[in-house]
Image (cartoon, rainbow, N blue to C red; front, top):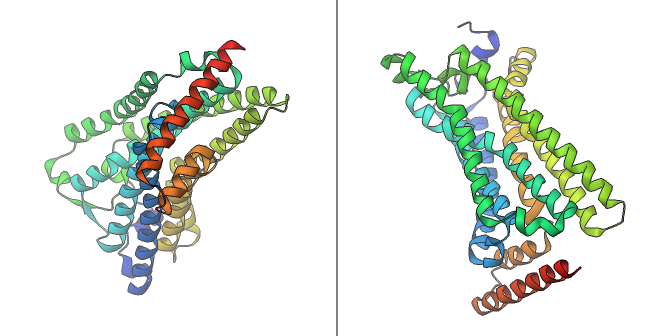
Amino acid sequence: MNVTAADRNLTAPPDSGSSLDKTVSRCIIVLLLGITINYINATMVHVFSKHDIFKTNPRYILFIHLVLNDMILLTTSVILLVQAYIINRQYVFVCALLIVPAVLTAQNTPLNVLFMAAECYVSVCIPLRYNQICTVRRTYAVIGIIWTINCLSLLPDVVLMLATESQQFLVSQVYCLRDNVFRSSYSRNKRDASHILFLVVVWFTLCYTYFRILFVAKAADAKANKARNTILLHGFQLLLCMLTYVSHMIIKAMVTLFPKYPREIASVSYIIVHVFPRLISPIVYGLRDKAFKRYFKKQMLCREKPDQIAQAAPRAGNLRSRQTKFKLKT
């Protein structure tokens, strides 16, 4: 396997590219960003778990799965980046234990966005069949399908590594990157092919649902207009997620152009590729959805009392049942 100048710069010890002070400051910034975003996401998970009105709505179930997925991805990526600054090289088997959940959660995001767009399309374009198509049971089945597809996609790489690599390699130390752990050309080609397939399917679904909702939105329906904006946010979120698939090529190209700043390039790339997309998820539903936003603000400000929670959930459930009956009558 050839080693380019960009690869050597990326695997250089931290002290060669930056001072100790810069290394510590970058680690602190990354940790603070990760902790802040995970705290917001954990609060959303807490709000979801406390209110039954969210547990019976497929939209919120898909959203909270995306939030949990982002928390796992952000945690593992922060650990990978910080240990790259501090330790620089890691044992292969330890690196694999961190890369596997990071890769799985990164691949889960586009598929999760796909089904969220599909749910939005059903609620706007065929609302009378919404309760039949989008059920809680089917939603959890969809989440299981997402994990199954991506596990089956990554499993051959793990099996191939264990079958072809020597035991000495597994206990050796490498710079913790996916291509340094799964070194087979088959793994790289399969990864690129699966990424292209997933992205084509997801982008086609997003475009189809957007234009269908746009056609409905011509009637100046507020719900349709909001759904159209949600699909646009999904598209922007997916665009940021796509950077995950090409980030290694962009980093190598930038390091080739600016060989003196490999650590700065890696830090900026991490924030753009991994942090920004994790900020989009709370905005799409957590802050734009009025019902979730109300409970979220109360939780953040610690103003929600237990008796208020118990009274609010039945009222919300009754309102939802009345809305459903009204739809069926019309």
